[in-house]
Every structure is written in C-alpha cells, then in structure tokens.
Length: 518
Picture (cartoon, one colour):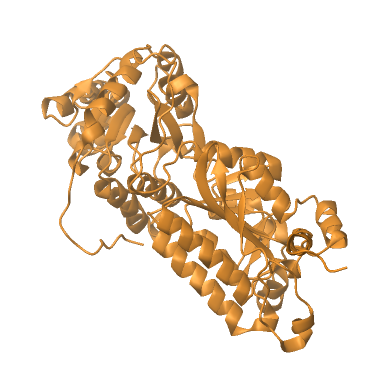
C-alpha cells in the first residue's frame, strides 16, 4: 500500500530526528553529552523551535560518500525564542560524521546566520565537531571561510554567542573567536588550533586535551573563554540569563525589567567593604553588588585577569555594563590581560547601546620586564582606545585610588566620561605619596639621612603630600570630578545620571574605522 504524502513526510522527519542513529546517540549520552536536538530543546522556550533545512544532505561522491548520507548532514538549524525573545541558532550533531563540516553543513549555518542578520536577532552556535570533513577537501575549508566572513559582518550588529559542547579544533576555532561570548563545559569542551598529537610530533611537548584546550585552560590562561559551566544544563540556564541583559541588535535597546529595588535606596554596605587604610585589599564586587538592582551581578570572564572585574547588571531596571578594578588581586593594577579583557567588554557594550559604569581603584600599570616586553604600552592603549571611542553613557566612580596614567585610562573626564564621581577619601594624583616624596623631596630626604631623622621627615612629608594631593578636591576644583559624594548615595546618583543621559547623542568625525592598537 502506497504511503500518503503526509505519511512520507512524517517518515522523513522521524529519520532526520534520529541523527546518526540509536547507537551513536547512546555513545553521545555515555560520554555525558546531550544530542544536538536535546540541546536545542533545553536552550529554547518549550515548543518555540522552528527547524530549517531538515532534509539537506551532502553532495560528496568521493570515498563512498554518495551511499553514506543523513538528513540534516550533521547540523540542526532554525529559530525560536528565549524568554519570549527571538534568536537564530545552529547545533552541530556529533552523531553524524562526528559533526564534521561539509559544504552542505556550512551552507545551512550560513543560511541561518544570514537570516539572523537580516531580521536583527542574535545567533547562537552550539559547537560539537571533529572539524573539516576530510572527504570534501577544499569545499569544507571554503565553508568555514564563508562562516567566518558572516561572523565579521554580524559583529557589532547582532549578539553572537558560541557554546562549545565538545571538540572545536583547527580552523573551526576562528568562528567562535570572532563572536561576542564563548562558553565552555568543564571536562567535555575543547578548543585548540592543533591537538596534542600534532604538538607532540612537531615540538615534542606532551600535553593532554584538557590542559591544552579545556575549559579551565581557556577561562584562566588564554582568556579565549568568557564563561565556564559545570555541565550542559547549567550552561543553557546561564545563557538564558545572559540573553536577558542583551538587546536583540545594535539598533535595539537592552530589555528593561520592572525594578522593585528603590531608586533612592542608600548603599549601607559600601563603608563596611572599603577598608580604613588605603593600601588594604578589598573585593570590589562588594561595592558593585551594594549599588545595583537587588545585588544582581552577572560576571563575565571571571577566571581571567582577575585584577579587573567586568559583567552585566541593572540600575532601575536598565542593563548596564560594569567595569571595576579589583584591589583584591594585584592591588587592582592594570596589566596586559586586564587591559584587553576590559577593552573588549567595553567595545561590546558600546556596540549594543549598553551604558558603562566604571568603579575605579587603580594604583597604576603593573611594572616589570614581562609586561614591557609583552607590550603593555600597546595593550594598555586598547583600554584607553575603547573608553575614548565609546559613545554610550559613561559613568565613573573613584572609590579609592586613581594614580598616574591609569587615572586617565579608566574612564576619566578627559577621555569623555559623562559623569565622574568620587568618594571623599579618594586619592587622585600622579603617584602615591611614598613614591612622590622620593622625587619631590630628594634633597630633604638626603638631609634627613645625614641628621638621622629619616622616619620623622618621611612621615611629615607624606602627610603633607596626602593633604595636598591624595584627595578628590583638587580634581573637583578643576571640574574633572563632577561631584564628591558619600558612598551611601552612589546608587541614587548613578540612576539620576543614567536618566539624564538616556537621550545622549554624540557623533565623532566621519571615517571608515579607527585603527585600534591590536
């Protein structure tokens, strides 16, 4: 008996949904990994997924591939919603050819990326692939390049999020590298340009996949990965939370949420967080969480460059990007890693209309030959460039120290921050008192050595210097600080400033693009 067209459709759909078959699905589960479709179902709102190109197959006829085809060709693509807001996505299927990318596979990804750009919605890529499909040769390589090109075209236009859920090796790593956020899973996600076997052959180094390209390696050492999750389910919950802070595209505004935290609430914990002695460390997160709505702060890049903290939060229901020097690590000094980490985050916020709030406590740039030889001048300039380039509302609070060039770089009035505030015990100067008196009062100190009064003389000169320079009032007199405030009023002042700056318009000189010091 002939099947009806509807029955034929259902049979084909069922076959497509089996991926590489029951045995391969079982192996995927045994490895502690979900299938491509299970991942889509967990990430998106229930019942919202609309699949595209379900019946696509590869076009390769070499190496017996013409008799080895699967519907979908190793990637599930389509669109749906996250918390009611539209997204496009693709999810690579490791049960089909190990998720290897073919020309047809790449075409499916390119098609959904084009759709995302055209409709102005974020694109999320779920990567679980052995790399290029060797049987297809240059067609597979061309497919990767087509994806890379689209990543660049989408950059700063729509949010791009990469979820690494298995291997991601060779040229495949460059697509996630261009996207805005990369998330990985502990113990099952790997990214590297060349794997352990190749490294052993070429350089004779022996290294495991985990040490070379695992989640911790990229979250803490290379800085490639922004967020790490313990398992896939936690990742999908985390990404849904991240999406709640982001606009759909560069012409959209980030979603506002109802705020039950009073706008005029006093920040009662900041004084408890800030030490009485200016050289004692403290956790800047304590200040941030006391200021933002309900203490809710989504930190990004937590394990990397811990001397600076970045992430998303809200003030009066409005998404803001937070940047804060972290005195609990390297005294909050800026170094190469911190500069590049913060610069990239600032540029993301600026591209997507997210105001930037900077909490400043910085004694300067980290000294040392490794920093100078590593290019701290160039990398520190990235942070300066990012702040100066940004046209979104920029609010700055100096909580304690702001010394030297680091004062300029950290969203000072001079690089066009809109509102600059400082606490009464803030110290704004070229350098700290101990270093300054060695230069300013060299003769006096030499005389004190002769008279054996070094300690008393130093104490007197330090006190005089601090009284004159280590405070916010000289800067306030010059208009570099708009207001010196009590810490308890921080939340209220920031929200008032954001309200004023809601309609901010700022146009720079016409140009194709600047030349950031890469």
